[in-house]
Length: 152
Image (cartoon, rainbow, N blue to C red; front, side, top):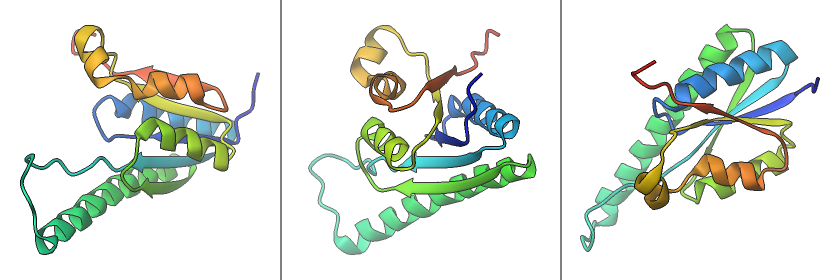
């Protein structure tokens, strides 16, 4: 059985991430591993063709970053309460799957534990699958944890 000492958990803070976070914490506990919880900021959605002055745009970005860091800090605190050595990483706007793979490489992750929304059909085609792309490109094993559905 593989021993994982550095575990990466990318989170988008959605309900689909919650079961993956719980699994990442349990795997980290079982392996006495370090857990890195990361988030890649998504661009702040704005109305197309609308110019926002810097004095308005910059505070929006600061608030976006601050909220994301608060979410990361809460997750890290929960992991630490379970006895896991956890840290956080907040990355600026980028293509999520590329940054996740890059962090896995640079931090020499032994395992990535991430959620999947389980989209199919048109929504998967239109939105893509970050998890699917990470699985294809990651330098280490990837454990995907499907979101719970209300029917279960």
